[in-house]
Image (cartoon, rainbow, N blue to C red):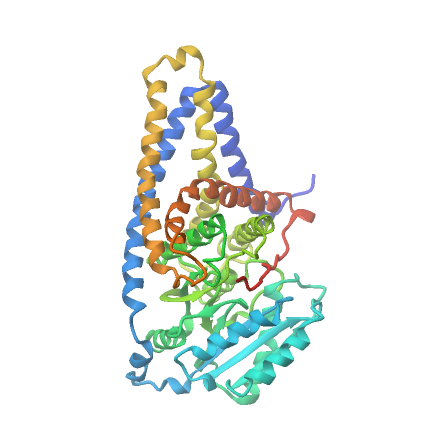
Length: 497
């Protein structure tokens, strides 16, 4: 019998635990429904307690956000003893088949930032498989190169040892960027890289805030910098279902931003150029490059690396493209791609405990990061289905004798009361949500405001359809491996009106 190595065993582990949980709940529902009801109620109570615990962190982050978003970071920056003009910002913008209007919008927003554009180096990275990119790049260079220190255009050809996607494209962009930086003799420690998606629109104070955080950090090259990600670019045009899914992601991130001991980089974020060079750049064979680069740094620096939360925002597109059914399919694919972060689990095992383990990294830190990764993926896949779907099954399957007991008769009321308590969190999210919305377009009537509140009743459904199911899908694909492994799916982008 062929021996399975530890890496493959850890690939099997997440989906195995998820499916064993579902199987155990189903078997208990048929064999011992009363036991199953006990389990569901205890599990629901645990999640309600956990919800209120997370709400505490959410409120802490919320007050930090409301305070920091009002700060004029550029004025603060000018008051520091270090001269911010000695530092450069690199903004990497990988693209694939995005229309010119989407790319142009991002460059226009970069020019609006309250920060010297001549201290910005923009890397616009296309793919050789995109025949329309050279024309788009030429128009961008002609219009915007005069404003920035450099607009560097790269065209990446996917190699045989690479996974087509953002990670391999960004790695190639970094190689070409290194050539430029070395030719200009720019100090690595004086360069901050913001790895954005092509539709990422930074707050006007973003680069001032980022530079301030970098210059005041005691060890700035050993930290990444995570902004709050909003999905406001087309939020008023989007469908309520898609708005709820996108905004729930914002609140999840906001909750974690006050817990930096468990925070990894997500989506658009910033990091030191020196760190990128130290770890060898973004990996070329993975999908979840945004958080992997942070894990690479944690291992490289023996655990002496952190993520600094920035409550200044970047705004991105929801997946809405004007066609509801296609947009819903795109939403599922996006959530499944994010859930493919489960691919970190075997990598973390190898580098924390296995064959490539860095044992100079404190054991407690290795255990904490691994637990946060595993528990997060497990809960993402199981909790909504157990509470909202399977939780009702044992009540239906209980025998007439069991249904006559006071416990079974009161169980539905208990579950409804627990769900009612959970609705408090939804109401608070709905209220906070209205404070982060952009100004209502003139094309949208006042009637859209109550819709923005009422749409949150869809949250339990979206947790299952666009939460648990794509997470189970991703983890099962990792279990099956081979042709079922996910490649990088590029979110379709379109300016909606």
